Structures are given as C-alpha cells and as structure tokens.
Amino acid sequence: MTATAVIIGVGAEKGLGAALCRRFGACGLHVLAAGRTLDNVERVAASIRGNGGVATAVATDTTDEEQVIELFRRAEAVGPVDLAVFNAGNNMPGDLLTMEASYFERCWRVGCFGGFLFGREAARVMKPRGRGTLLFTGASASLRGKPFFAAFTAAKGGLRNFAQSMAREFAPQGIHVGHVVIDGGIAGDRIEKGVPQFAEAMGPEGLIDLDGIASIYEMLYRQPRTAWSHEVDVRTFKESF
Ligand SMILES: NC(=O)c1ccc[n+]([C@@H]2O[C@H](COP(=O)([O-])OP(=O)(O)OC[C@H]3O[C@@H](n4cnc5c(N)ncnc54)[C@H](OP(=O)(O)O)[C@@H]3O)[C@@H](O)[C@H]2O)c1
Image (cartoon, rainbow, N blue to C red; front, top):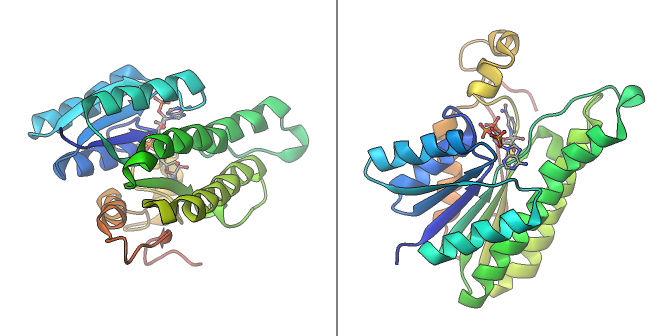
C-alpha cells in the first residue's frame, strides 16, 4: 500500500497548502488534499495526478471533529498515514476594542482548535506504528504579538505550544512533530491578489518563495530520527528580525 500524506488547509493553487500537496505528491506519497472548498482541493489533486502522482481531494473543515476523523479514516483506507500537515489558518487582524467575541473565537477555532483535532487524529493512527511525521504551519505571530493581531497571535501562539507539547509527548514513540515559522508574507495568491499593495511595498524578492518553503517541509519529513528538528523558521533575505 502506498503511504499517504494528509494535508489540511489547501485552497488556492498558488498557496502553501497546494504547494505542499504538489511537493509530497512528487515524493511518491498518495496525497489527501483537504480544505473546505471541494472545487479548490479537486483542482490541486488533479494537477498532482496530471504530473503522474496520486491524490484524492477531500472536503474537510478542520474545526469539525467528525469531518477530521473521517479524513483520517479515508486516508488509512488508502494507505498508512506517514505524513500529516496542518496548514489551515488565515491572518485575521482587528482592532481589539471593537472586536466581536465571535471573531476572536473563529480565529482560534481554525488556527488552534483545528490543529488539536488534526494532531490528535494523526497521533492516533501513527502511534501504533511507531512512526510518522506531523508538521504545523506557523507565522511571525507564533512568536510575538503585534498591535491589531491579538486574535491571530493567540491562535498561532497556542498552536505553537500545542505542537511543542505533542513533540515532547510523541517523539519517544517515534512520531516526529515539527513547527515551521513563516516569518513574512508568502509569494502566493493570498498576498499577491488579496493585498497587492503589500506585495508591491515589499518589492522584488520581498515575499517568501513557495517552493523554498516546501523544501523545508520535505527536509523535516526526510530527517532521520537520530537528527530531528522541531522548529524551523524561514524568511526572505530582506526581512528584518
Ligand atoms: N500567506 C502568508 O503570507 C502567510 C504568512 C505567514 C504564515 N502563513 C500561514 O501559512 C498557512 C497557509 O497560508 P496561505 O496564505 O498560503 O494559504 P493557502 O495555503 O493558500 O490556503 C490555506 C487554505 O486553508 C483553507 N482553510 C481555511 N479555513 C479552513 C478550515 N476551517 N478547514 C480547512 N481548511 C481551511 C482555506 O481554503 P478554504 O477557504 O477553501 O477552506 C485556505 O485557502 C496558514 O497557516 C497561514 O497562517 C501565511
């Protein structure tokens, strides 16, 4: 049976989720591309199949416990889950004094609670085999809170600590848990189409390259268990930090 990679938080073709699906499809894993919008994940899966890989699109909302359980059930029916990537989480800025409680909670549900549901299901299937890699996507907000990013920072900071806790609990059981801090804007649709003025302000080579990020995830996946990294950060040469 071909080993599977479950990747959640897959949307635009020019987005990190899709780039990770393509990368691990090229590595020979059967990719389960998961996101809320079936058309988007179908498109990503089709592009992997078009390049000779194997992929299945699964509409999944990471905040829905039953859907996340079903995603891993479907993956295990295809082949053992060897890689799971939690990539969901959108930047949700906002002025604190006028922020609705529901807005804060939605940000946490997608960016942190969704990571718990996904990580738990990954550990449940990986633990009996004593192997597997579980990677979480972080952001600058994983490490520090800036004005107007209270909700996003709380979600990403919580996700980072959750990933650390999982790493310490499951490393001795053969599961490699990693967290990637993406410290800056990504050269993908979310910035280039969503906030083109930001992309322009960053100038040439001002945004982080998608393939470059995918190479970090692949490096983490391929590390021998005698030399595991838990956290890796990535930024452009222009970014101050
Ligand atoms: N873009 C950046 O500049 C940047 C910078 C630093 C860190 N990051 C992090 O990188 C990751 C990916 O960002 P990206 O901008 O490249 O986006 P992306 O990978 O293109 O898209 C992530 C996708 O996640 C999906 N998603 C959102 N909520 C979901 C949910 N509840 N359940 C399942 N899927 C959900 C969305 O698709 P649907 O709406 O169709 O479900 C979205 O398109 C995120 O964790 C983000 O915080 C991004």
